[in-house]
Image 1: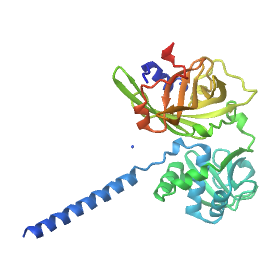
Image 2 (image 1 turned 90 degrees about the vertical axis):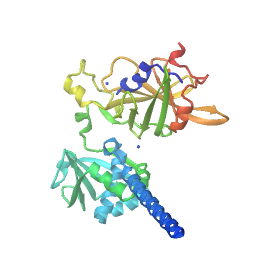
Image 3 (image 1 turned 180 degrees about the vertical axis):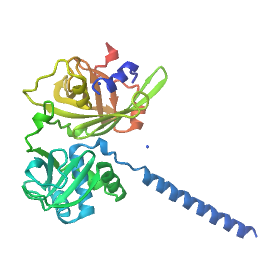
Length: 348
């Protein structure tokens, strides 16, 4: 599909403001040794290439990460919590640290990690980029201090331990609850996290060709986050966290530079239906003009198979700017394809 360069840019900028017999035997042994060495190096290189970027984790994924890390490092009550979570589900509840006596109270929140429906004794606090872990905690008490780590240190740890599969499974079972009473005062109108539709979550790829130049884009949807990366316009990628807005929020007109810095990376999400598609629309937190960017999962018949595609659109209609697929190979194969049941911007 041919997409004008400005349309591709819009997807990145609109809301977001990888003896002969002896000699032969000797050579074969040498070749075998070299292949073994190369295979070992390749395996080692592949292992080193595995990376979990802690900065892009959703709150639910962070809860999963911390639980796995603490269970492996400290055992005890954290191990019991992990087992309970894997057999059921977990709840991370935010409390005021003033209700406790932690050695490191952190930024004002005490995070209680518990099996859903139960009272937890495993907690953590956050100060700057460092998390502090506890067990045996009771209200108005401190519990036992176990240790500390940054989120990236924890991410690297579970990758090294080969726990990525467990991490992903557990993240699906984590719920975040705020009982601190501080969210409204501190959050510039955020009333909670916006949940991205399950069918949209995961990784999508797109490819576009204009004037003989092919560009690629990647979209990664978490439970409440969107990461977009391109090989030309946004090589480092951009992450936006989606929230819902409280009904009594008053938009600052105009917002100050400090306020704009504070909400950088925040997005306002909502769902709507248009022309038979279920769209998720995303706008900047203080955005007052324009229609933002919309995404919808749609099914098309490709070569006799029903294939899910991600429709990337913008504008009031909205108009389709691009299509993404679950594999990069499919994206490259279908980059010039227009589907008759969709309305493209360059059709107007």
